[in-house]
Image 1 (tube, rainbow, N blue to C red):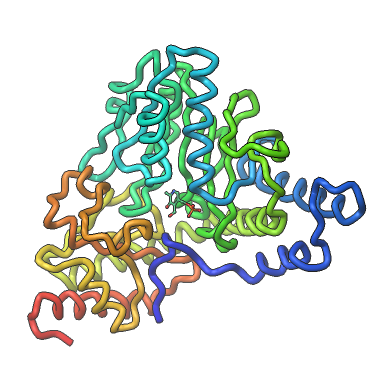
Image 2: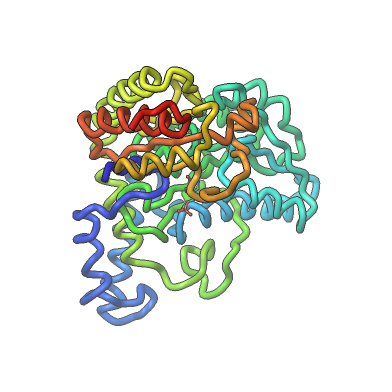
Length: 385
Ligand code: PLP
């Protein structure tokens, strides 16, 4: 099988499994316990927090471990918006881009439905880019928080986060970015990026599903979503997932060491793959930005086909990928992300996303591109195998 669905999830790395294993077995303590087992767990958690902080360039106290990217996004958007409005009732708007992951989009909708916020949606251009002008046009004195993703999970477009965050900072508005897909491929130093909050997910990086991080600047007030024993400095109650935190920290550390070299290597492979697919399928349309895109994502529409049929034909040929986000898999509705890019609904339904792990190689991509030509040909009924 050629696995080209790494944006959905990745396998756990061996080094990660080895690092977390002790905290699932002999060192199984609860970090809140005052005996030696508990203290060992608390030390492991503190070390993991410090390791994440080193990669992000922040203080350990600014790192909150969560159950994944979804929870980190929820905590950022709802937590910052609610805390700021409590402090100043005039702050009753949030701004998000038109192509956010449902974890942000649905959180914004919850704030609208249940708490009466107004949601301002920043449009994107045909490549999926949020321009500074488009963001500036929606920001208001009442905006409590802005959330613009670092890199899109369906088309791979990378946003000019530094520029957008600076714009929000100049107006005193906290800026959150969902960096779930960017992690491992793009620089994550929060000071360089100028962001106030940033979300990560372990399972896109070779850590298990169900581990995540929210970085939030120490001075930012955040209304917690999960109440209880006050763990994670009161930002996220519940007995900590020590093994998950160790796993995420290990995976993030490895990814940071490898990032620059892998981004360069995989970008070149991605470009070769894009060329090969465009050659194999003359009507194919590359979606997302031609240059400002994740090294790991090549996404297309194949007009005249159905994305789901192409996926089935590809799987028959040993290539596993997806039509877009894993959250929307199996849905017949065209992707809201592609619609926001101005792609017609009929064409949007023909989307296929190929996304690579850092272990991807040239030969398998050449094989995959050939399979794409054959699969699309077969769906179009033009007699290829
Ligand atoms: N944000 C983005 C951009 C994602 O791609 C995903 C997962 O696909 C998430 C958030 C959610 O992360 P998790 O699966 O850890 O909840």
